[in-house]
Image (cartoon, rainbow, N blue to C red):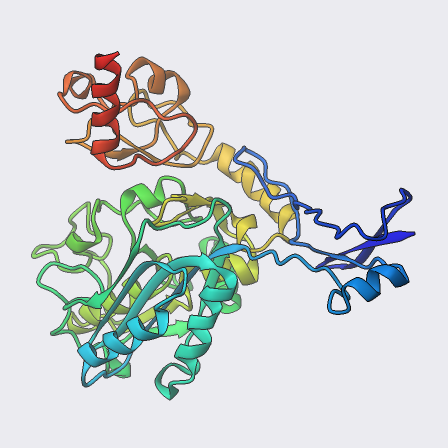
Amino acid sequence: MRSWCAHTSSGPLTLSSSSSLSPNYPLPSCFHYGVPTKSNRRRKTPPISIRCCASPSPSASQSNNNSKIWQPEIDNFVVVNFYRFVCIKNPQNEVAKHLTFLKGLDIHGRIYINEQGINAQYSGPSRDAFAYVEWLKEDERFSDILVQTSPALNGHAFPKLKLRYKPSLVQLEGGISHLPLLDPSMLATTISPSEWRKRLEAVDNNDKASDSNRKLLILLDVRNGYEWDIGHFHGAQRPDVECFRRTSFGLSPTEHVASDQLSHVDKEKSDILMYCTGGIRCDVYSTILRQQGFQNLYTLEGGVSHYLKTEGPVKWVGNLFTFDSRLSLPPSAYNNKTMTETSMTQQAFESDNFAKCYICGSQVSELRHRNCANLDCNFLFLCCSNCLMDLRGCCCYNCMTAPRLRPVLPGFQRYKKWHVYRDLQVQTQAQ
């Protein structure tokens, strides 16, 4: 009698096999565990490892004394994000150290280092991904760094590894090397996800208060407009920004500029709650607002991704945009124990005025962007299934006549390099 023991996050499960196997059979079987597929509904499937707990016969034991337990290793891919503003006196040497350690590890992503610190987003098998984290934390400068992870169900979320010195850890007009990022007094006050949740829940009570008792509070989304389009906190206005590099909140030369949410704000009396995906953009921009005289600045610790992991989608509607091949993740990807709260968020999503098709304005069924099929446009946009087929994956009719058109990709796949489609056209014409 042989048995299989499947270990899940909730405990061991035993699967018995009643068939008689040859005592000399080496049991080369392999089990595959279920993972969520690309669909509108994701299954809650905890990772499992399966061990063969079979008791071999004496003859089998004699023939192979070292094979006591057959245990296949299942190594899920993950995406890891972290950053830290800290003084690095010789960033080029630091880059060399990191490259040396990562040699031989299966890591893809963007890891930038300079005199002001490090900013990293990468993917890899969990063993390699976390080995890098543990090595980094051996350095006292990064020993308490907040590391965030999310699943990468289709393997690597980045095409290759880019680990290098970069003058600006975040892209902003004029760079950020001149900003006082290493001065804690110039950064916004960080508040925990639980405190953030309490403050957002208090906004409803604040709205019901009289004008004399009402607390002035601005919920500022420090991301791009297209990120807001698929997910945001309730009450956050869509930022009129298509690239963080050009963010200009609080910098308007005149008051009451419609696109500037801070143009009419009292800099001394208003509380400004800033949020972004992981926190780094808020930290950077808070120093600019400090220099402009804004006093009560607060940022969400770890950004939206950390909030969804700890608090679930309370006061959040939609998905979270990601700057990798996944493009979008539902709240359940960060915390699969919040499925009930996620369904409540879905009700809010259906009643909220966002997630519209860029072409026809109808509600899209999937909160994930795609790139225009015209390579020379490559515009990132939301699209309904009808417009996708009518315009053959393009964002407008003009792009449909462009010379370098790529095929319409099924589902929400990402385009590959142009030469792949160019060579495919040549082969088709040759046939």
